[in-house]
Length: 193
Ligand SMILES: C[S@@+](CC[C@H](N)C(=O)[O-])C[C@H]1O[C@@H](n2cnc3c(N)ncnc32)[C@H](O)[C@@H]1O
Image (cartoon, rainbow, N blue to C red; front, side, top):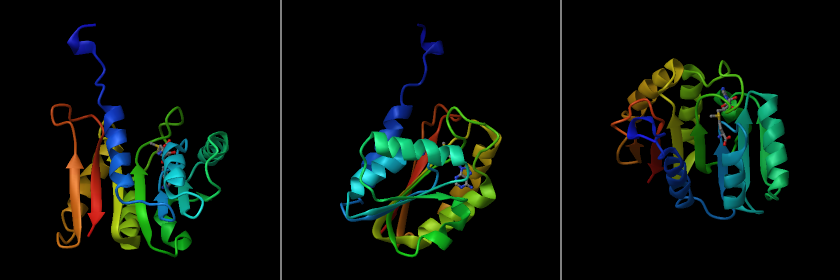
């Protein structure tokens, strides 16, 4: 295959990098949230990371996502520590009444699902603000953005604007992106000191 048509093979590494980052901030017994559960890959990862004594809150607006996540958690023998919530992550404060040690956002649409049902800038911003408010000292959040579609690009612009306002004495916000492939997914890692 010539180089021009080769698929950029770094996406999987970016996903792994996010998980490694989260693992540095999450221990057994911790509390985590998957704000975009989708097919449950991140929910299952968080469930294993916090173990039997921990707790995971997972949100999605599509019942299909809850069904496939429930199946995945069972199939993978994950600990019974996950609360699946069929609601927008914008309402996370109604469900999470304790500090979280880690949160993950994987924005966009359900892989293999309806591309019109995607995360939207206003609810994403509300949810990210809530996640930042809930974050415990020493905790971390990852936000993966997909700028290859219009709404994803808009989310990325708003998020970057917001992250830039966070007090650098309390938070560090690091953006990881492939600068010679501007439409590729990228993510921000947020740590609370
Ligand atoms: C890219 S997928 C997430 C993939 C997922 N993390 C995984 O491991 O499979 C994005 C998900 O966000 C969900 N979503 C869209 N708007 C949402 C909202 N307001 N609140 C919660 N989830 C939302 C979509 O339904 C979709 O399932």
